[in-house]
Image (tube, rainbow, N blue to C red):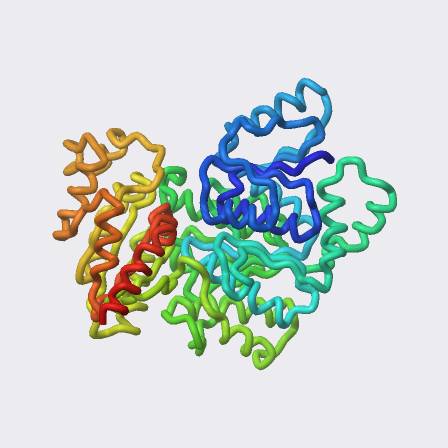
Length: 481
């Protein structure tokens, strides 16, 4: 084995793989991404060799390539396939989900999925399991979690050397008899908790023993034809799970009769009030109830053992995360929400906490298809807010003119700017296409106002990157007073 090459290592999911390998004492990691980010800087901080820009690393025979599905046509992946073909020898070339499949085969694996809430529920499950489940080995998700030392993964330090043996077995094509012997004794001995994404049926790669499904609501309409198609993916997922699948009590009502539960593996969970000390919102009662049911089952625990770490869970990054207070002491929040239902849930949680304050929503759309298809749902969800600002869409590689044909009143639109102006004017919102104006909006929010930034894209990174500007403004204001 020469190098382990991670392509698009600046993504939360791929950087998690880099950190896991680093913490398992692998020193031959090459992290590649097209742009600098907070995560690529964090990789450098761990002394992981990080390259910005594709084509700067020459793939060698014997390298292991692990890549984000979005970079399957990158120079590194294509070069690896060419080397494998030219040298007529096998090489390990895996996308992120295929890598997780390899991991899941060697652990008692628990997949946590759903249209909404899978990151939050996975984070809650990992943060709780690491304190109560002795055989917990490894966990990974798509968000940074304060309870996990601001990482997107967790490795049980008590069994790290044994997990390293499993990974050596996975990544080493020339396995010695001794390595095979040691690894076989460890297979399916420790638990692996993993966030499982339904996009393009990626979660079907996983080899799962247990699962949690939080909810179902049609999403990723650039791939799924309709709700029946979307439901069929979850049905395939459920059919592959070997043991129990935990779902909310009312879950089967969501599938419009398309959901089949006759195989006896489903456990319907009554949703109870969970008295979290840090997180808020009724949706967290669903997450907490499902995690409680899972850990009771796999650990044979009583509630009083699980409750202390469960109730003390803090939060996870970009899930209604309080970034700071501006110079006027207005709270600025960031949330990953990019669906209409997520924005509605966010409003209800904020209104419950701040019933008398003005709520300002800054929304960065993610995927033109999502906005065009669910335009009316977004309009309805954002009417709750006192003020809404629409910012430029994030990285959608789609044909605008083809997509707008799906909505008759948008057929005249020729540019994204026209689309967002039309979208914004539907409810007397404001469309802003410059980040400087967004920064000004955040800076000038008053004490009685709450600003929440909804984005699955780069505006969160831009706001954090420019936090020094906002902090300096507040410092100046404080000194002036």
